[in-house]
Length: 225
Image (cartoon, rainbow, N blue to C red; front, side, top):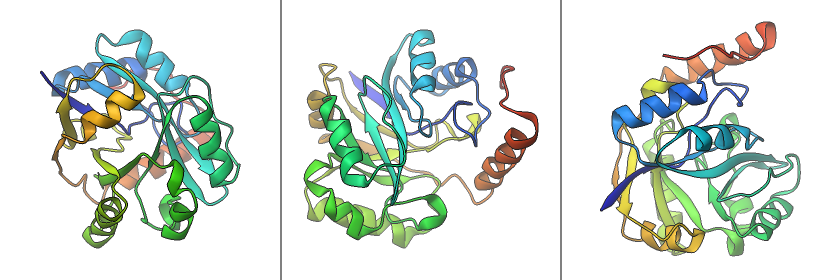
């Protein structure tokens, strides 16, 4: 059996997203996603909430802000403290037996992405590169990430980075069933195929609006549709 996965998405535990865990689970089932990672900003609570609700595989994840940009931990057991250096962050991820993924590689400071130099500094700890992030608008930036993965023999994923429900299902990674372990997951990604559809230039507007709403009205806690 092949799994349809997406390993970068957000809930309202992120400051720029309004999706409830319940709505996210419903949407994943509607579009056929059956192996996901929820990667809220500096929080594992969204992953935990979705994991309790879902009847499909949920990998506990977190998109962690470091002093030089964001790094994603997959298969985490505990939350990683934000604001540390990249090298300290990846060491703490690895201490949990988890995997290190580089999100939206080289996309620039506007997306809190690590520069190539910063990725090279932590390269010995990196397991995965997002070879396609649907919210990355530049094909040249996407190509740079893919080339980096190929040069350094890193497995790739295709992810939505969804901050709205509508973004889920357009981009995904299809890969074989695995044994549930981080290493088994990484090996299965070596046989992955990718469906890639850019999210469109307006999706970042929704994230900005969510930030404004959060600032003035606090987090949303009613079901999303």
